[in-house]
Image (cartoon, rainbow, N blue to C red; front, side, top):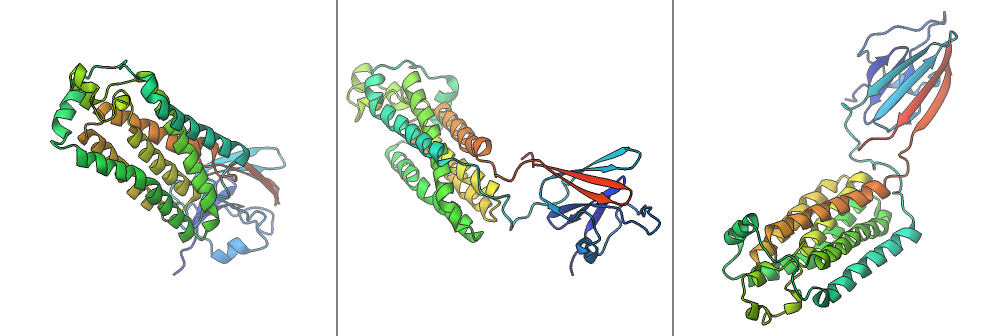
Amino acid sequence: MEEPPEVFYVRRSMVVRLGCHREVLPLRARPDGHHDQGKAGERLPRAALASSSNPLRARRRGRFEVAFVAHPAFTVALGLAVALRAPPCAAEPAGGDLRHDLRVDIPVTLAAAGTAIGLNLAAGSLTRACRWCDSNALDASVRAAWVRADPAPSRTVSDGFAVGAPVVTLGLAALAAADADRAGDIPLNSLLVAEATSVAMALNAIAKVAFARERPYAHALSADAKATTPSPADNNVSFFSGHTTFTFALATSAGTIASTRGYRAAPAVWAVGLPLAAATGYLRIAADRHYFTDVVGGMLVGALVGAGIPLLFHRPMFERAVLGSASVPGGQIFSLTLPSPI
């Protein structure tokens, strides 16, 4: 059975919730020019909403509806209906295309990726001696508990996770778009994920060179033994973990974009990406490649940049304030739709 709409009165106007949509409508006018007072919670038949006699029937998708009703005496009644009790439309995207400018996004992605690659290649010559050489009680205790007797398998698996993370994450994001019949979103989504991840990795490379923290396995060696490690140039780039930064940036940027788009399968992107990133961070500690604080730093930077860039620079284009008006018996009604705050 079709659920009737709910009606919430706001002085001489009312906010109607119909499924995922809200409509701002005036109270029904009587032939004598007055309005029915009605009661809070009164239900109207669906046909009444489609009637051509309703002065204002435009659907609004914003979470906040503000209605102004002006009367001949120029008194204005202001009502604010916060439609938090109405769930979002799972099957409907949050808006149109995401804000983007290929003339900016592509160069930013390439510049950030180039910075990350260049600094990682030069890190050996820039970090010949550690500048952050000491451990601390927290890192030492976690290392003692988590590092494996044979760290090689953990390192191999963590490298595999880092290599596979883009395939898994971007693949799930593409499937989520296809599931929503929006396969055309896939190229832009992939570019924006690459942009956020590249920026995060550029910050990671800068931090590695700036801090030049000694890796835990190197810290445990004597001065002479440090020169005999398989890659001495890699001994002093522990903070913060690049594998963890990379996987968290991928997971959060892909998840944020999928959620912002309103894809029904967006939770699957989060549900797979975040555990994969967390497992990668753990394995980097188990492999004795990073301290606990290195992994936490990578997690924070990767997650903040991965979610922050889409939220700050690539919000849906429709999210703006919209003002509408219509004549009603005895005055004019104005509606202001504000964008969602989240």
